[in-house]
Length: 336
Image (cartoon, rainbow, N blue to C red; front, side, top):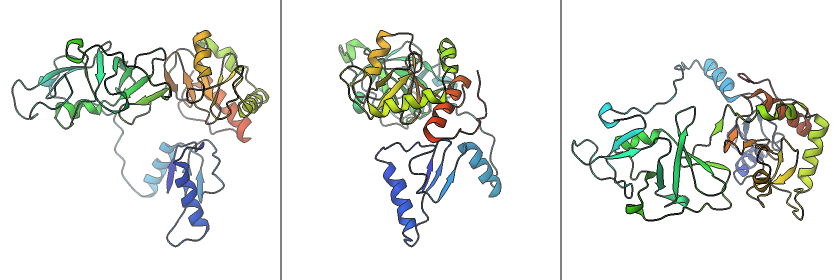
């Protein structure tokens, strides 16, 4: 069993790592155990049969070379859409109803069975299924890989990602239903689209989790980031293990640290005190989860890739040293 890039911080899925490793340790016939590949230490490293501290790209490039597998040069996916079905950039003609997203005809037939699917920035859309069914959201642009960013309504402005592969599938008529349609008050009625209070900070309409590789809010706190010491990081981790510092809150399990003020506060899955802190201190955008050392920017409404932005990587490295007693490998492509 292989575990790739996961921090294994206590989710239910961690059972698979433990179970496979223990079966191998017991000598169960045919059980080879667990292999963990990631840069960060995990709490189950001592159980696994093979532990590799490296980037996944580097490991699999070497593995492919050893196995003499020829790897094609990576090309970023781009939806293949015939010109006649794309009248404008990010506007597509699809054989689906813009009322409910259901298919209206055969995609191979030429005729009037196609309707406009407008995914341009600023378009109001209605989500057609899942836990956000009937919520009205806004297209807020695309990420650096061309996937569409969809912001839900409400004070928190949670942002989701719709994979660009939906476009090609929709044009070809391969979907049972569009994941979202253009919102029309006459067709859909007045919908407020309430945001559920326990949703994660960022997620996906398509199973794809997004982390940005460039954050405009890092420069504003470069000085604060550069002043972080290992001893201070140890103190922050110690406080996070004790409780959230919000008055009257004793949460211990899901705490974050504001990297500007250094306040330790609980996250959205607990009592949302870091969310409240950001609303009061609007320039305190960047936070870090003390459990898995992940970074979130309230200004960008997105996770931050911790290995590609130099000041963020330095903070990550300091906390990694404070938490595990050793630094992480120098990443390729760190900027800033």
